[in-house]
Structures are given as C-alpha cells and as structure tokens.
Amino acid sequence: MIPLSYSRIQSFLECPFKFYKKYILKESEPYSTPLAFGSTVHTGIEKVLRGKVDATEEAIEAFMTTSVQKQPYFLNKEHIFEGTQQILAALENALVDDSTLWGGEILSERRFSFNQDWEPCTWRADDIYFRGIIDVYRAVGDTLYLVDWKTSRAVSNNKDQARIYAMIGFLVEDGVTNVQTVFDYIRLGYQDEEIFEPSIKAEMTDWVDSISRQVENTTIWESTPNDFCGYCGFKADCPAFKETVLDIQNEIVTEETIATMSDLDLYKFNTMAKAVAEAADEEIKLRLTKGDIDLGNGKIYTYRKQTRTDVKKEAVTLLLDAGVSAEIIAPYARLSSARAKKILASLPEKDRQDLTDSLLTRRSYNVRTKISKK
Ligand code: SF4
Image (cartoon, rainbow, N blue to C red; front, side, top):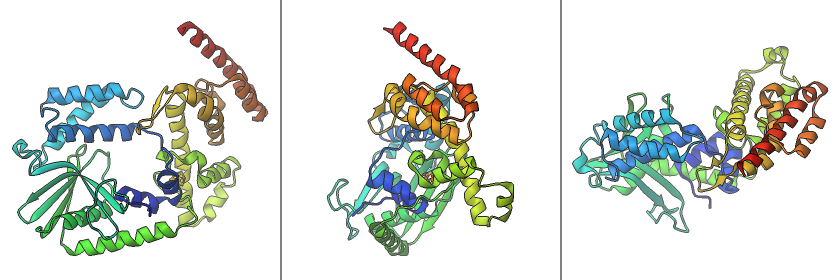
C-alpha cells in the first residue's frame, strides 16, 4: 500500500509519471529557490509560534539571515527582507495574533496520520495510509480553524486541499460542528476561507479511498504535461517532455500544424513549449552556474559530481535540444575534455564551430582554477 497525502494525491492527478519517480522509485527531486524560500518562511513562522524565535522584527530577521546563509545557492540577501516581512505578516493573522495562546490553544505544524480504517496511528506506523501536516490548528468552541500559509505570488485553486483539511479536522475532533479552512496568502495579504460541515468527512474519505485504489491499480505511469512541467525535476527522464523537445527540434509543430490542432492539443503544446523554455533556464541557473546543489533531503550534490555526471551528459544536450544556442551554453559548460570532444563530435557543423573554442578554453580555465586553489 502506497501511503497518500494531499500533495501525493495532487502529484498523482497531475502527472502519474512524476508520482512514480518521486514516491515509488523515491528519486530525489532537485531543490529550487521557490521551494527553499517557502520552506524557510514556514519554518520561521513555526519557530515563532513554538516560542523558539522571538516575535520581534530583529529576531525574525536574524533567523532569516542565518537561513539564507545556509542556502547560498538558492537564497540571497533580498530573501532576508522579503522573508522577514512575510513572517511578520503571517503573525498578523487574527487567528494567531494572541501570543499567550501559542503552543496551547494555537498549535503549529500539527501532524496527523491514519490507517486504512481511518483510525489515527503513529507517523511512521507500518500500516500508514494517509498523512497530513496542518500549519495552524485552533479549536474555538464548536469550530475548528485550520490555517495554511501560502507564499506564492498568485492565488491558486485549493479546493481539494481545503476539503482534505476539513476531513482531517472532523476525523480527529469529535466535538466540532464546523471546520473553517483559511489559506493565508501572506505575500498578497489575501485570505481564502471556507466553512465545512461534518458530511465532508465521509465524502472525502471515500474520495481518498478511490484515489488510493487508482494508485494501487496503476501499472502504466503516464507522463502528463501540465502547468508545472517547467518546475519538474524529472523532465530529463520524462518521455512526454523529450517527445515535445524532439517535435520542436524537428519542426514537426509548424504554423500549419498549429492551425489544425484541437484546443486540447494546442494547450498541451503551449504548456510544453513553455516548459521547454523554463527548463532550459532552470538548467542554466541550477546545474551550470551553481556549485553544491542542496536537494533539501539531507543530500548535497557537489559541484564535481554535477560536472561529471548530470551536466556533461544531460544538460548540454538537453539545452541544445531545447533550442538554446551554443553561444549561451558555452560560458557555463564545464566538461572533461573527453566529454567535450564527444559532444562536439555529435553536433551539427555550425554548433561545433561555435562551441569548440569556448569549451576547450573553459576546460583550461577550470584546470587553472583548480591548480591555483591548491
Ligand atoms: S516534465 Fe511534466 S510531464 Fe514530464 S514528468 Fe514532469 S510534470 Fe510530468
């Protein structure tokens, strides 16, 4: 049985291939700036609500400064100010602004886990079926308030997430007659609220059960292009992504073919074309200009490892496939001379000419840098 959570369900519904890579093969997905920032702000709010960081601007700024210094490849000085302001904004939420209730009536980052009979169990129980973490949990009279902090720049559709939170609330609190979910977009100063009645519990446990059955019965994990492909860490192995790159490279998709596409195909094509561009950008930013890559799971890929595995083999060819010019790639590419020659040999004549000098010069530059550091 594969344990589920709201984010796992979302991932399965968006793209089964990504779900398979991430939750069944348990492959790590590369970390990114939005993930690093969101996670740091969440931790900051939690630390304040648990009394581990004072609720003053100075203390919060000190927390942000230390956090940014620990993640130099993803966060910069601007994130210190931005994060501090967002944590302060979250503390103005009327549901948490009474510090005398922190750690008591107001609980932060509360974890819930259930077995297949929807009975609470321990977080790491062998028969775990569903898990959830709720940012703020507060029962007042017969109403349970559940807050989720959002650090995104835009309001998104969180209906299923709200319904799942309400389900959790009614599963664990016998006495409440209402659950109110509050998605607090702290960057935007906007709160999306919804009130649920107890009937949501049966409705959503049935829904999760049906998704769980679908997951268990899935044998072909199809890659399904969606709005988040650009941020997906598995695109290098993704059949749909590669197919679209090839289509674009081979000009299968032309103005004439676009004119005859159905709305759905056009939507898919636009999504993937955007993803290709974003992926190329991400590759340059994350893989080629960075040193250590913190995967956020305790593992850090060193620059050397990136250079000798992913970058040399996948990134340069992916970037070229995605239409990024050799001129743009060259300053960032750091390759062994054997690999550089191999890649050069596989390129069309024009790209080969453009890249030869820069790749080999870059190689010498790297060697010199290494020697001078010793
Ligand atoms: S790139 Fe898109 S289609 Fe491919 S695995 Fe990622 S989310 Fe799925």
